[in-house]
Image 1 (cartoon, each protein chain N blue to C red):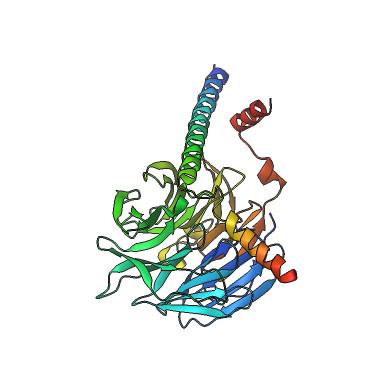
Image 2: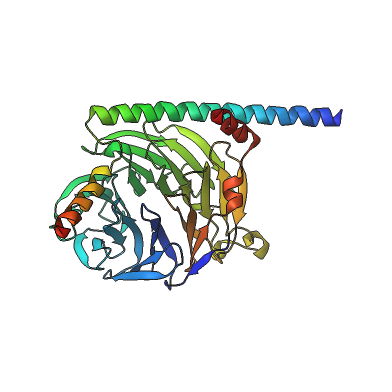
Amino acid sequence: EDADRGASADLAVVEERRRLLDEWLAWRSRVEQDVREEREARGLPADPIAGLIKETDESENQVIE
Amino acid sequence: MRPILLQGHERALTQIKYNRDGDIIFSTAKDQHICAWFAHNGERLGTYHGHQGALWTVDVDPTSTLIASGAADNTVRLWDIRSGKCLKVWEFNTAVKRVEFNEDGSQLLAVTEKRMGFLGTIVVVNINLDPEGEQDDEKVLTIECEESKATVAGWSFMNKYIIAGHEDGTVSQYDAKTGEQLDNTQVHEMDAQITDIQWSPDRTYFITASKDKSAKLINAADLEVMKTYVSDTPLNSASITPKKDYVILGGGQAAMDVTTTSARQGKFEARFYHKIFEEEIGRVRGHFGPLNTVAVDPQGKGYASGGEDGYVRVHQFDKGYFDFEYEVERQYRNQSQL
């Protein structure tokens, strides 16, 4: 009986974690999509610093040439 | 996790920051200089001298070209990482407690202290990421904190909001362009100071640390508290780990505030919690005093803590750290692989 009680308690804990993980993953995918769309709409690069790093590389290449 | 001990400061640490690649660590302390270290071996890369008071804060721009620092000498200074040269000094009326670059390094915010005759403020300046270029004198935005002074602040995703944590335990959301306050929410216990704010990698949510012994995970868009991490000691710092869903909390009660030795033991530890399940999963000891600052490598390979004891401890995460997962997480991982 004790073992049964322990098992059902464990099951409840696992179910609760599953719920929390589902909830988190759903929120993340929603936010990631929203931000992606908003960046696109504002004409911002997907990676905020993508352009900055590339600029540095180009200027270094120019110096070499 | 055997740590590397960085000995270069003579006073209590105040802030630690990794650069974006995670290979350099910057640290500030009350001893008036900034240190830069190689993260993989703890070798000191350099020091930056010039401030005339305790240093409270440091940040590195996203391209790892410049660092900014704020100090008790009422200045913010901008430094060329490579040459160690001070490129710019901005003067304020009071001490500067926190600086942070925005996501593209085009602007810097500074949180100034409240003092008789001066309200606490959040000030924004423009940044030129070219170390050879001119820096602008002008303070392009000043937010005055009339209700309760800001203790920490940072920039959200898309440089859309400035988020501030206050002395009274509230969090504010400001329009980062106009400075208009859009929201203010009591997220921590009333008058429990917010001691730290650190961002998720995409800056859509952040973690706060508070003297009320808890840390909170908060949505930057609506200031909703999504998670709470309950500790047994006042917290000074909190950080979100990339790669794994953990958060790391640091704090501890100063010796003078504790009556018995036993109460003090075990408090000076970095505490790891599962970010989603809110459960504590481990502790790392080592410091001889409260942890004033914790920072995580943005590449997820390790973390560093800075103590009231004057030491920085750098830890590389080991296999056990990466392998650990809850049964539920394992199931999800297997499902997504199918």
